[in-house]
Each structure stands twice: as structure tokens, then as C-alpha cells.
Image (cartoon, rainbow, N blue to C red):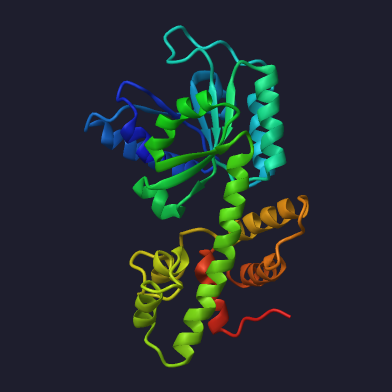
Length: 305
């Protein structure tokens, strides 16, 4: 994502970054330095998120858990932010949080920022996985208090992805993301079971994949991220399920979706509990792997009671 952002913003602009992983940050800065010879602009590393916010007009955050988001914004808002310089592209800051967290946490942040600062805040969780992040084809689901703030954020979001949909007011982006990832969590399990059923029945996995992806069973988990090696080019299944979207993150998103549904009228999610038990069992054995590793777990006799 940062590579795409650096490549697409004006070369005269400086990209400020902050990450808890020093090795990843150093590698990105080194790559950006090499790119500078091709007239791509500067990259600077900040000590913490507060420094980023002090020096930037548009601030992206992407964090794993609600607790991380709360901690980062507690640091950012620990004291009044200084005014932006007259040369800034806007007199007010825009915070774009792309984390997948619970809507109440995001709504509380939006309320605090909008009521105590001249800044703006939108929730803009993303879909597309590591493949979409590297290729710049992510989809952002945006919750914004106003159409004007969404319009301001749109060019920045399109530096990182292919589309950004305004789903409604603050929190709506996260509501959409949780619905999407609930569907993804369940459909991934179904694809893994379907592929396992077909292979056990003597079908060739590649031919079964071709059939599914040209029939009514087609979905992202079958076509782009098929859990059987050799079916989807570039999928984590072809590299021992390394990389991709970690099973722990999927388990977290599923938990958030189930919790969100539990707080709404109309009851909970019928398949949520079963899916949670599956991902809990898989994470216990295959923690850190892409969530399509459910297939490997099934082939090794994985089951839930």
C-alpha cells in the first residue's frame, strides 16, 4: 500500500511513515531510496503516530485490533495538534482509518475528533487482501459524516485502490466490511469442504476448480484464493499458505461480525458460531497461515464437536 501511495502522490510531496516493525520500515525506505532515482519522491520515518499527525495533512492508519487503534489515537490526540502551515493543501487534517474494528470504537473516535478538533475522520476498511494491496486494486468501504469529506478523501483512497464506495455516515464503512468478511469467512470454509469432497471423490483439483469457477459455486475463495495448490495462480496455497490473510485476522473479523449482529434487532448470525469454532481450531494448529489453510486442516482430519 505504501509503495502505491509513494508512487502516485506528487514527487514533490514527502511520505511520512511509522510502523512497529522496524525491519519492514527500513526495507521500504531502502526501496523508496532506489526509486528516488526514477524521480519518485521522498520517504521519511517518524518516531510515532503523533509526529505523523503533526506533520501531515492526510493521515492513514491501518492496525490489527480495536485496542491498537485506541492506543494510536490516544497518542495522536494526547495534546492539541499544531495548526498546519499556510502552504498545506488544506487547513484541516483528514484521518483515514482503514482498520477493521468494531463500529462503536470507530464512532467514538469520529465523535471525539469532530467535536474537539478542526480535523475530519472517516472509517475506510478495505477488501482485496495482500494481492489487492500490492496491485493497487483494493476496494474501500467508506463511512463519512459528510459527502464533502468523502469527496476529499476519494483521491487519496484511489492512490491505494481501484474503488471506494461511500456506504453512509460514520461507522457505515465498518458495518459493510463486517458483513463482507462474515460472508468471506463462511464461504472460505464451504470452498475448502467442497474441494476436499471433490478430491476425496477422485476428481482432479484443477478441473474441479475450473468447474466451480464457471458455475454457480464461483466466489473469491474459489477463484482467487483457492485453497488447493495449483488451482489459483499466486494463491497462498502454492506457498504452504504463507502470506495472505492470516487465520487469526479472519477469526478476529468474524468475532467482530458476530458481536455486531448480537447487538442488533433480528437475532444473531446462524452460521457464525460454527465458523468461529472452525477458525479457532485451525488457528490452534496453523496459526499465522493464510485462512485458506482450513483445507489443509480438513485433509488432516480436522473437525469440531
